[in-house]
Image 1 (cartoon, rainbow, N blue to C red):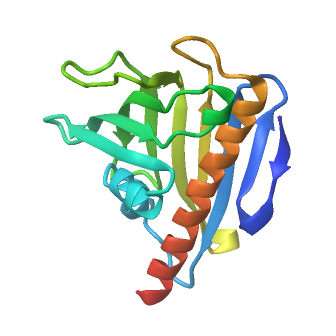
Image 2 (cartoon, rainbow, N blue to C red):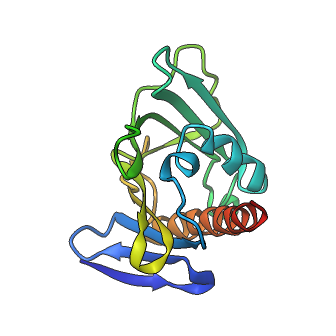
Length: 191
């Protein structure tokens, strides 16, 4: 069960009632024609997220594995909370695409992994997100592609994320997905 924190812009942000560190972002992409989830949820999504949110991310590095179904992803966030003494943050994760063309859904599963060899993270604190899932499926009854992102903001490398900053981080991610929804709505209407 989740309780709604914010539902503005037709993007719903909720917090789990069972775990205060677990959140969900949901929205629907309406279309007159059936949308293929695999075209909207794939590993190239990270580049689009960065292009739409350069005020949130310094950069997003994606290193595809040979199988092209997984990648090491490092997201460097702009510094927020400087006045509270917080350093800029980064997230290092492994993203795996669950994207069998026979399935009527697409999913990216993420989990925090150790920092990549040779990655310079001096001056940054790490955010550890042990579990995330970006999921999309076509809903015939609503004529919509339903997109849902479940994630946990567990801690940072110094376990110094105050509770209010977790909610702020979740709201910041909601902003990222509002922009993604607006971009995808325009893309769908132009096709």
